[in-house]
Image (cartoon, rainbow, N blue to C red):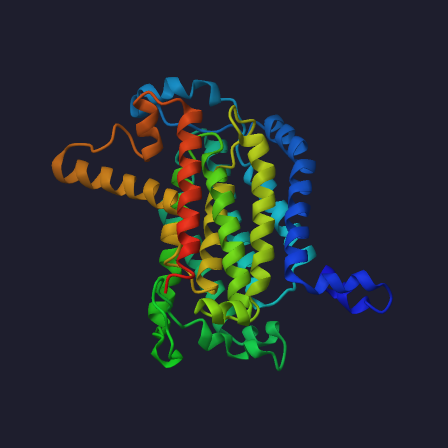
Length: 381
């Protein structure tokens, strides 16, 4: 919205600055941070008043972990709404509403609704079950279908503007770029069929949503790792939308995706604001309202800039958490033995005697290292 001020340059010279994505990305991050700090105290107070308490598993199921987390039983959940409003308002204010921005925000809204429904059922039924797996998957399927409709359907060209270079965005979205591989000849880039593309989108959205959801088990853990991932993808989105940078790095140039860096910095600002209240000891938890939606938002952005495989590296902590659960379940079913004291893996370290803050800070450090390695893939081709 504020990007339109660039056309008022004749009225006031500094308005020309609003044409630059870098300026608007900075503005989006600051706006989201301010909005988060502004609504945070009121939202936490409201959640406490309505009794939106986090539902925990029974002590018989989690054992010693219940004693370690006994002081968290009165902490409200659904704090993901703080991030949601910060990101949505900031993105609408600072980003140009092209097909990529609209797809990212609509996916984020849909998955926020799924997460909200899950948290609402946990609170109202006073148990940790919430929305059943099949309904979560249905919500993720709908979000995937809507995203593909926007990117491949008749709306794609209209949202990018007639005559824009992105008129070929439908075809561009079918390209499959692999990290460390340089495509000197664009004709050698694999083109995915609609079925394969749909499967890739579904796996990415569900994978990132569920992985961040599993990571959200300690104060500040998931949101702190989200900060590094959001910053990394802000840089990647900016590079993807800039022809000169994309050509130099030999990565996919997708005209218009530079605006996604504004959504990423909005997520960065909103996440930092939420971390202020979620740092140990947490005043509020994000709940599935936050984790499922943030995972979907990061996933769809990675897909649109042709960096979904890089997300495996950048989001290494999320991959570790999800993999630990898969290995634990598989080992117990096949061998009757557990690999970890408890999964996700952050609980394993808790039960080994690590303080919660030590686990979180060390995972943040790893997340930063994964982000730096992910950025290195842009040049290592």
